[in-house]
Length: 190
Image 1 (spheres, rainbow, N blue to C red):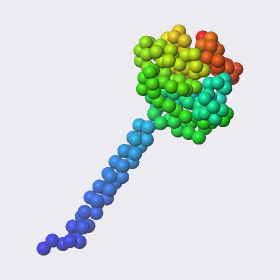
Image 2: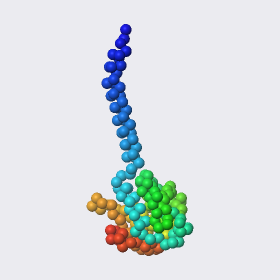
Image 3: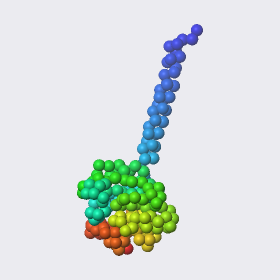
Image 4: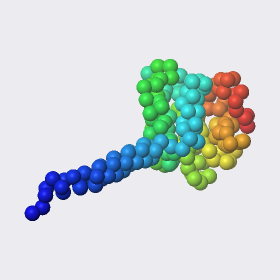
């Protein structure tokens, strides 16, 4: 006859190890899903720049459809920010304009926005995105190497392992945007 108490006592260490393995697996799964939602530090910094552009650049009143219309940060192409930018601007305003993020798959999808982050691969796609928004009062931002030559307003670049910005003053002025001297001090003027 099998002693049930003996079997249950021998199973306790096994059950403890099994529970520990399950808990470890669950914690690893949840931490990896959190990590998957958080973009690399480079794009966290760029998201912070995009948000702060709303504080250090003035858009003309006619850039908005109404005095309380949302301030739209548009992203065309692949979104490298994940949910990070959306979470950063949630509940924020610039003036009377609540800040929202709008995603566009292609340049043809771009509609009313005040700030447009262009993350398209080809020079032709970037050119198309820029032509779809002109002459509207839109701040255009990208990482693309030749973005400034194509008429973009702000370009992110890396120097000395730091994310920096380059500003095309002629393009920004043509867009009707006024850039704060505080922002100009940290930028390279193109």
